[in-house]
Length: 158
Image (cartoon, rainbow, N blue to C red; front, side, top):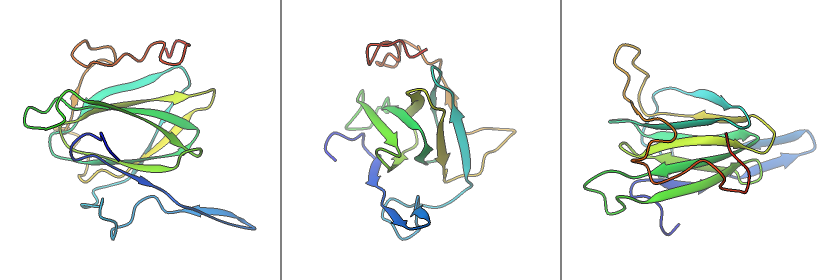
């Protein structure tokens, strides 16, 4: 995909249906996007809310939206990156099943789209350290990030 932030990767996921339902692989260790596995968790975002901004110093995040639709936004502030200053927006979920790899140092966040809660699964490369979390946080409306979560689709997000 042209224009993706340096180090980020996007993979179209494949849904395998049968007469009982479907199966969709979210992350495999033999895919070129895979680095390593630390843990897995699911995070929920309610309609009208935003979960942003944060980045990690060491870990990559692998995100897949498994329920609802999520608008996931990345911002690259890394001084040594050829995509410094770039913003990427992804609409992901059952209507667009993708795996998104977010590299260390890239701020990211997400909002539910529509009237459903968005459920996003993350497979970070590192275990969460409760005493010293590997994260830097900014408010969703921090002026250092050139993206506004408000009125992107004609309606107020918050």
